[in-house]
Image (cartoon, rainbow, N blue to C red; front, top):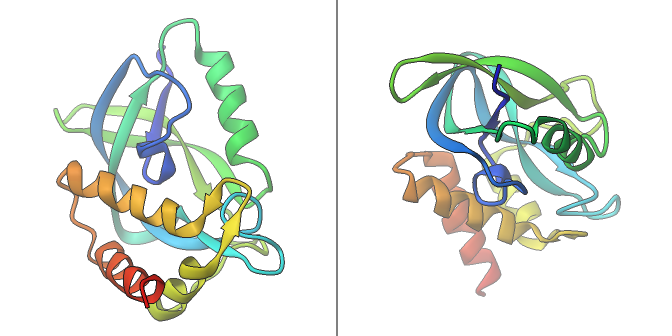
Length: 176
């Protein structure tokens, strides 16, 4: 059985492995949200950034990418993703049903937010923009994460009004 990975944030533009297949996919029951404080990759303990997570929502719907891992690479890719995504216990690994653009439903590995974790947060968009505009972590500025993710969503034809607002607001805050 093939290993599929669901990308909805940085995996869209930096999966860290070469997928055997890439397909647009939808996950129901979750939405893409800047609901995780980043204290390692895109911020610090003293000045946290924000990164995307899949947050459960009754009417939620998240469109992203399903990556099929090449046969024989499953263990290496899974180990790599665990090291990258499970740096703290803020994300949980979940096997989720994805609907591919063909209508086929598959099971995929996704990283969803642990709402009981200290890094889980819910902030108004303006506060999100303020945090993203200034935070920098081990993998670079939080703005880079926002802009790369938003650019890839646009290239894929995925409309995300909150993301578009954040991009505009963060650009305004950082070009003053």
